[in-house]
Length: 307
Image (cartoon, rainbow, N blue to C red; front, top):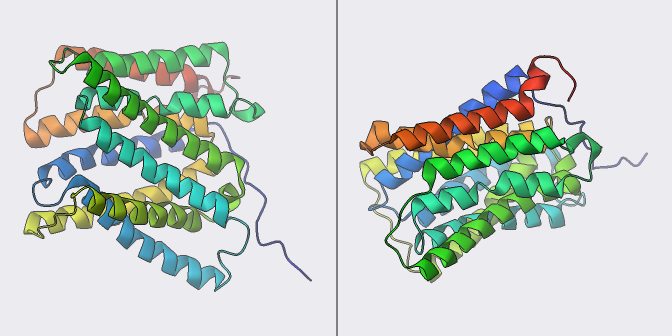
C-alpha cells in the first residue's frame, strides 16, 4: 500500500511555562554567541564563522536524515520549500552583514528584530496565529523597548544610516518570510532534523560563496577560534536550532518570535560581562518594555485565561 511520505502538519499550541523557559534559554545562548563571534573576528571573519558552523551542521543533519529516511529522503515534496527556507535564512545574514557596514550595530539590531512583526502580519490569515488588538499592542510595546534600548545618536551621515537601516529591515523581513514559509508550506510538516538540514546546508553554500566573493574568507585557526567555532557548531547550529525548529512545529510561531526579542538584550548583557562593554540606564528601561510586551501577548495563557 502506498504511503504518503509527508505527514500532516502538527497542531501548534499557545506558549506554556515550559516553552517560555526553553525559549529564554535559547535567547540566552543566541545572545552569548554575539560576544563570542566578536571576540574572534580578527581570526575568522564573521561571515566565515557562520559558513563554517553551518557547513559542519549540514553534514551532521544530512547524515541523520539519510540514516532515518534513506536515499529518497528529499523526494517527498519538501525540497522546493526547504531550499526557499534556507535561502531566506542565508539572505537574512547577508543583509545584516551589509547593514553593519553602513549603519550602527544598534540600528541593525532594532531593524533586524522587526522580524516578529513581519511574521505576525504574514500569519494573520491563520485563526490560531491571529493576534488580538491587545496582543498587537504588546508587540508594539516590546518593539518600542528594543528601540529605546538600542537607538541613539550617531555621527554617520544620514543617507548612509538610512541605507544601512533599510538593509537591516530587509534582514528582518527575510527572517519573517522564512517563518511564514515554514508555517505555510510542505517543509513545515517535515521532521525537525530535515528542516534544520535544509536551512543550514543552503546557508552554508550561500555564505561560503558570499564570503569568498567579498574577500571575507580569512581563517586563522588559533586556539580561541577553534573553541569558538566548536561552540557555534555544536551548541548554536546543532543543539539550539534543533530545539528551535522543534518548538516552531509545536507552538504558535508569532508568540515564539516575540520572545526572540530577548536575544539582543542577552547579547548586550553578554558583551558587558565578557567584553566589558558599557550598559546605560536607557538599556534597562528598554528591557523592561520588552518584558512588559511579552507578558501582554503571552501572559493570559500562563494564567489560564482566554486569549
